[in-house]
Amino acid sequence: MSKKIFSGVQPTGNLHLGNYIGAIRNFVDLQNEDQNECIYCVVDLHALTTKQDPVALKKNIRETTAAFLASGLDYKKSIIFNQSLVKSHSEGSWLLSCVARMGWLNRMTQFKEKAGKDKEKASVGLYIYPVLMAADILLYDTTHVPVGEDQKQHLELCRDIAQKFNLDFKAPNFLRVPEPLIKKNFSRIMSLKDGTKKMSKSDPSDFSRINLNDDKDSIVSKIKKAKTDNHPLPENQEELKKRPEAENLFGIYSSLNNQDLTKTLNEFSGRNFSEFKNKLSDLLIEKLSPVSQKMKNIQKDSKYIDDVLKEGAERANAIASKKVDEMKKIVGF
Ligand code: TYM
Image (cartoon, rainbow, N blue to C red; front, side):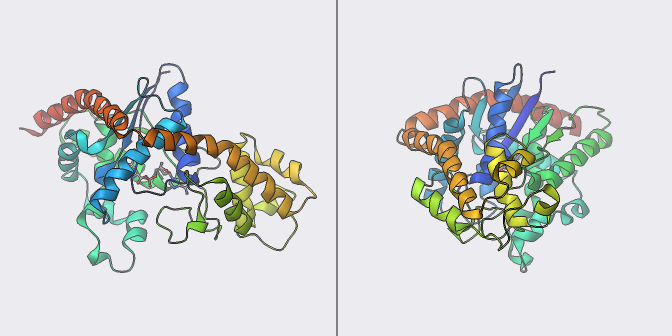
């Protein structure tokens, strides 16, 4: 069955291995499956929910687009654009924010984490960010949304908003209720410094993550310094579950090698961490260097990137503006 795919990535710099394994690599696989219609968005409106330097934001929009293209997204096959070029996202988001309930947003754990202790000082945008995300998805009659584990709650909210809109305005099935596509394994890559914390762009330590544009030496030294424990390498999955740092590194290795954890456990059984870490660095370099090299080349041509985004925005606008017009009719305008 053909799927309508929508997903987005924030252009906030420091794209990392979690973004790659949890999202971007899966975008490419979905694009290359027959008959899927894929839309991939650089969600620059979302980036504004935390403080941004305008010059850096512009650079990061291009860098994220370059990462999409370098990873194998093809702008002829998929629609690739940045959110701020398609006005319907802001308009749809307003219509949906009048349907979403405060109580629902109050439950969002990512807001609590990002706002931290002083949530009075967080932007209103950060609070209603999942509503904008729902608009992104619902404007395109999306059937499936590929994301990492951390976006699961936002997708449940998106489904609730779609159902409430359809119910409130007596428009059954008007907004399509999308399914999350979250890989069963390796959909949550953890920090290299703490196996219980998600790998994240905003971690102040660069040693907590592998960035997509890290060079070979950085990859080697980050993996060398990655936290492990003092025990020998785990022998089975049960043992692995109790050792978060080892589980994360084994997960990264398995995922990049497209193999299950058991195979990795067998491969390294009886060996020591330093041998495993050398192999892991080699694999990371093998898989990521071509991507980072391509990213560098693509980024040399800003006009090419801007043209890709502009063309994508025209195609996205043709779909989204129709849907938002229908929404406006339904609500009584
Ligand atoms: P963002 O920009 O934080 O992350 C982009 C994608 O990367 C995934 N991801 C991870 N996956 C595994 N392990 C990690 N450590 C890790 N860190 C990030 C995220 O799950 C995501 O898939 N709100 C979204 C962007 C968005 C969106 C949308 C997504 C806006 N509109 C519509 C889907 C559909 C976000 O901030 O992702």
